[in-house]
Image (tube, rainbow, N blue to C red; front, side):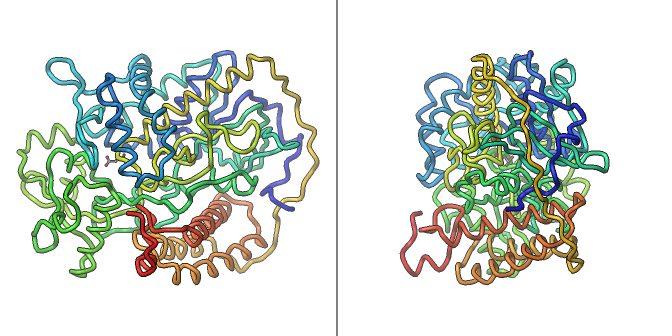
Length: 522
Ligand code: SIN
C-alpha cells in the first residue's frame, strides 16, 4: 500500500542521524527533550518558529496537587469533568506526579506567581473543588514556561532545534519506528533516529472557530494514521466556552481564560441576563462542555453570535494586574474590562482524543512515543478538566523520557535501517484546490462535528470527506499546504467515524439524536 508522502531513501539522510527525533516544539516536546539524558543526540522539530505554538499562548495555568491533602479531590474533579470515562490509573499518575512536575519546572527556572507570604497564588477554574491552578505572570503562563524551556534547549549541547521543518511521515522498518521524513528548505529530507516522539499538538484548524494557532492542522495524528498506529477517543473535541468575539472569525480567536470566571466573572445573554442557573448548579464554573453548550443554546435562542462575559465587579487595577494579556486585548478592541461586558463565543480549543499511548507515552508502534495534546492517555475522558493539559504534557513527557533512557542504557543496539524504496502518493489530479478544500472542511466540521452533533447529518458529512480524500490521494502532495490539507481530511475522517461509532452521548460528544434513543450517559 502506498502510504508515504515522499519516497524515503537513505540518500535523503544527509548524514543526519539522531538518537531521538521529537516532532513538535511546544511544552511537551521541549520539556521531554530536557528530561532525556544529555548523552543522547536529540532533534526537536518546529513546524514554524519556535514560539509558534499553543503552549506559548497558554493563559490559564497548571493544575497541581501540592501536598497530599488535595490529591483525592483532584482525581475526583478530573474524573467528574471527564464524565467517568477517563483512564483512572492515568489520572492517578497525573495527580500523584503533579507536585514533582512543578518542582522540576522551578528547578529549570520557572517563576510561578506567589502571594505576599511566598505561597503559590492558586486560582479556581471550572469544576475544580478548590483553587489549585498555578500560573506565571498572571495570564501569560505559557510564555513564562516556554521562555525557560527554549533557553534550556538552546543552550543544551545535545539538543538541536530545527525550525521551519514540516514533518511528513514516520518511517518504519520491520514494525519499528526508525525516523521521520520532512520538507525542509524546499526539499524532502529523511532524519533517521532510534526513537521518535510525536508532540505535534492539536487539531484546531479543522474547525472554523478555534483558539489554536494556525500550524495546528493535526499533522502528527495524520502521520500516525498513515503508519497504522492506534488512535483513541477521537470523538472527544473540547470547545472552550469563552473565546473573544470580534466579528472576525477568519483568524484564531483570542482566548478569554476560564480563570476570569474562576475569579468571579459571570456570563450574561445578549439581554444582559445571567443564565447559567438554568443549566448547572455550578453555574459559570460547571465543566466546560456544559458551559459551552449553554452558551450555544443562548446564542441560538437569541440568534446572536455571542454572549457576554461580565467582569465589571472588579476594579481596573485588579483586572489589569491579574489578566494583563486579556486586558490589553480587550482594550485593543475598545473594551474596558472593569466597565464593559466582553463579547464571547465558544471555539474549538483542545482535543481529548489522539494517538493511543500507555502510561509511558508508548504508542502501538515499537520505538514511537506520543505526548501532549496529540496523544491520548485517557486522563481527560470525555471532557478535560481545565488546566490539566500542561500538567499532562509534563508528567507523561518525563515518563516517556525515563522509559527511553532505561531502554537505551540497557544497551539496545541501533542499526541503521535497510529501507526498501516505497512508492509515494504522487498523483496528478489537478481538480484539487487546497485552499478551498481547507475552508469547506472547517465549515463542515464546525457544523456537524462541533458542540452539537447529529449522526444522520454526519453520515452525509462523511461522504463528502471521503470523496475529497480520494481526490487528494490522486493529487500532487508536494507542498506544505497540500499535505496539511490531506492531514486535516485524514484526521476529520477519523473523528467523524468515531462519532458515528460512538455508543452514547457523553460529555463533549453530545449527539442530539441519541437523546431520543436514551443513549445518554451525562
Ligand atoms: C484557559 O485559560 O481557560 C485555558 C486553560 C486550559 O485550557 O486548560
